[in-house]
Image 1 (cartoon, rainbow over the protein chains, first blue to last red):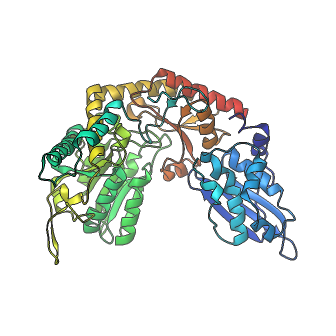
Image 2 (spheres, chains in turn yellow, brown):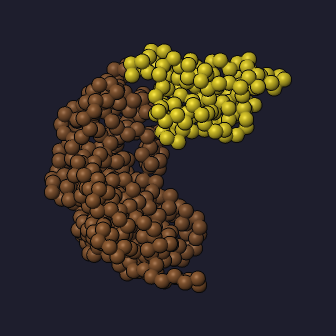
Image 3 (cartoon, rainbow over the protein chains, first blue to last red):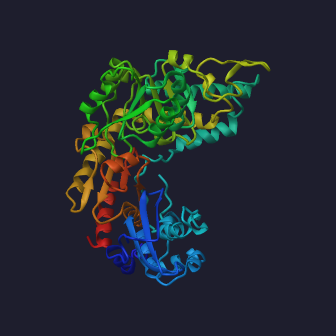
Length: 135
Length: 401
């Protein structure tokens, strides 16, 4: 547990990066984690060619894991093309969190990934397989 | 209680009875004994083993009727759980008795199981569903209830559905008084007793309601068995909910005649060993005495409330008065999300529920995403209350609040 709530995670939770709502924006999507009621939205501004992410912000409320995950994920998105976003592997985000995520918390850790994919696809996408693990 | 240590090596402090209760040895033994020595299908075989199984299954029905203070065991329908019991009423009684323009009233503190079946029913038949408001301290707003029971031309009130105990807040509702008010308004009353029957004396005759729903697994019994109690004349007039084997008297290619109540509502092979296990759980609770169970939980609640209510950054939901608060404590911690609270508690061996507790309207009412809920039962003691208080401090330390 001390592992799970390392300073790194708590710092992102207390001072999240890219938190807010961009207006105007090109892409917007909101989703929730049905098991805990956490809600998250993401707004994205694309570059001139509408091919890559120029700016991104997330908003909503949730646990330390979901908020830190969104903060870390959104830090890396500027400059990425939409194709690169689609090809992102959720495992990389779990690795980057750098803490062991138990089965009960995987959806918390991957909510930001799901919201991002929903924004890029223009509608809700399924949870990545990694989030459905039960043990 | 389980003797295996938790992942963290700490003693397990189980505070999630409101979700589902662990099973005492007598229940586990009763289920094993049923499968080992008495198992066959019920109500069918013309042989000793089946007669034995049927007698034990029907014995469990008598135990449920006795425990709930039901006028007759023939009014006890075995279902999977309280959710199925409420759905049975919504589908069977509801589709036959609720029509366009009619009203159903439930409350803002209900479990989803006592909301969604009514939403579906009202949507289908063109009726209106209304919710009684709750106060800041988690009680039903009785003035609002009274206003909703006022007669309205062309909008007859058909049913009032209310929980005896809120699973999210712990509030004990005055269901006998509410039933009387519903009857005076010309409506039937359904009581969701899933969170009350396991924890306090209950008597259907005193409540005076028309339907009552209960789950076995929350009262030390197996999962997959519960009951709907309904007034006989209502059950007899209701069409079957599910059809098939054992709920019929006679089937021809042209049609069927229904079996008598309660069998009319029990299509297919029931949860036989589970019912028998539930009967054993009821015997166990009766041997403890439900008055003493309630007293024990009130004692733990008062200590927990006292230990937590003064802690900075901690807010407790529901009424402070132990007379109207069951052994459920819903905790909101400033700056710390309930999921994080529960994970930190888990690392201390303290098992609690974090989430909306299938009562999202309650969360909306208090503008919170979720709560951390600790719930007590017969096996808990003051050490567990202390562990809970200690875990709250650990959470504050980890988050530096």
